[in-house]
Image (cartoon, rainbow, N blue to C red; front, side):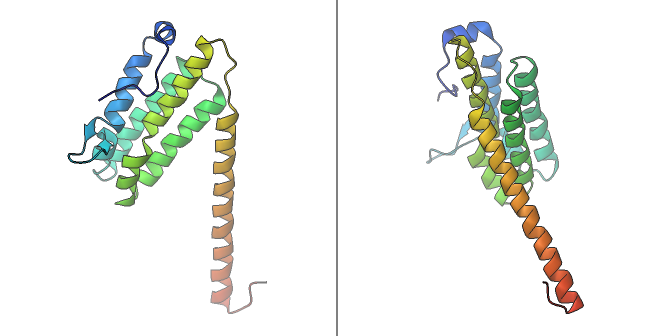
Amino acid sequence: MSKAVLPLDPKAREVHPGLQRLESLAWLMDRAITIPGTKITVGLDAILGLVPVGGDVATGVIQVGIVLAALYYYKVPRAIAARMATNVLLDIAVGAVPFLGDAFDVVFNANTRNLRLLTEVQEQRVHQQPVSTRGSVFFLGGIAVLLLGALALVFIGFLAVVSWLLNRPLF
């Protein structure tokens, strides 16, 4: 059972030896335990997520720690840090929904996703390539469009309910 998220160039490990600890933490949180008879792995995130409210808060604190380490110690660009924070928010928000959230925790693996983003940044830096933020900007733009669409639907639904209550046409 491999802990590595991505094959990391040995030079990147020399530049930031703490990356191995973050890899181990992401592995523990997302995929440390294989469910017998399957290829499905779970970690403490999914297990602690079964504890109402407190479990999701506890795992969220650890996830925020990984994002802060990426931002402050590894100096990831803000767009990538924002994408990492969005992964954490999605994991916490959906994880808080009973049953659906537990299944989501098994599949989404926010820590592994965030470590993969951090590892890609480190690889680009080791090979003296400019760090690409394009994928993160598109991801964040897509999330913004989805949120605006959801807000618009909620607003239209609110207007429809008010119209129905007042027994008047909506438009």
